[in-house]
Image 1 (cartoon, rainbow, N blue to C red):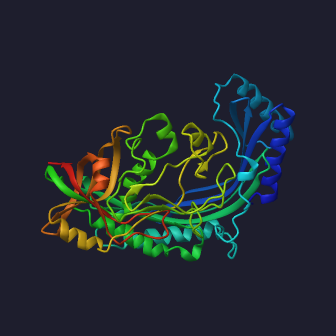
Image 2 (image 1 turned 135 degrees about the vertical axis):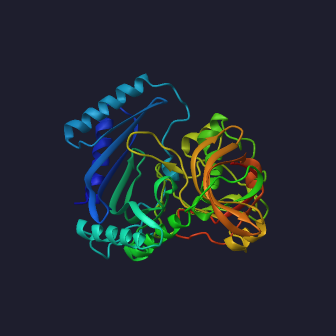
Image 3 (image 1 turned 45 degrees about the horizontal axis):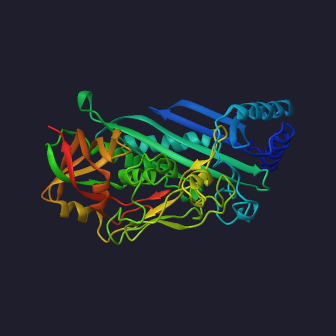
Length: 452
């Protein structure tokens, strides 16, 4: 049974009380409760069933420019007091950092819940393990029914209901709940050394928004079957089209490069790029934490500051960094309300929902325009230099000749420099609005493929 929101709120207040008794002038606390069920099937039979229900708590104390974090899954009064005493003792030995501190009470969000964001499904009852198993079996059966599919690696269905409450000695206290329904299928096509695999997976806060398990299974099967006969591509410089499934990884590298932690350390290939072009003109990157029904939406950040829509890149120009209070102070800037945290570590900067400007052309139109090149549908491994932006990754997908998909590709490496790659991208119009990173397929010029 899901831990009640009132229980999570009470736990954070008890942690703060314990910290005050232990001698901490400032502290913040977080309590996370979750009820999760996951069912895996294979070959028409139950493969694995897991259920987890419990609560985790975390306390951070700040003591004269020093901090320490402790966490536990034991919520007894004795444990709460022991946590506080241990955190204070640890903080006394921690290194001095004059950028530490809670938010000024006047800056705190007036909003203390997620009303209106529809993050939790409250209209339907929680699915039973048997219902989840039926979903997984339906997805697997649909995948196996596709021509060329010889087996499945797994099919699964899961449900999670989660609650979080954050409180601090500056007066902030707020929390919310969210739910997640997910279905996944992994199909294998071919036999022997010619086997290929691919997958399909979808997750939504509300079950009515989720595609049917049959649709997910069919897609996984079709994707795997299309990969039969894959071989290495020729080596050389060619345009590369990152399919919508993997295009968000490129934007993820940009987000990592503008994260305040990397900027404050001087370990970013965009460390001197504030106010400079980082994407082609006409393309913007928007963060909007307030989109209803999305998995990473949130009304306030982990330091109690109100979240709001803002441009990270506007008309191709970098508009600023992603900051929490600590990294903002290190850089002499205000927090951008991007703090995130778990129970065992202090806050750090992180984005929520991001949206990249879409183009006018479809993915197929970009394939036709590229003439000869590589369509990448999956990536593996990574060698990314965070300081220079040099990029190298293993890839698989499809070779394009004469503006058409010619044959499937595997065992190749693609390489370039992220700063140059992002300045040469052309977006398609196929972004999925329900993704937390709504990024369309991206055509990138000037990269190199290492294959046969």
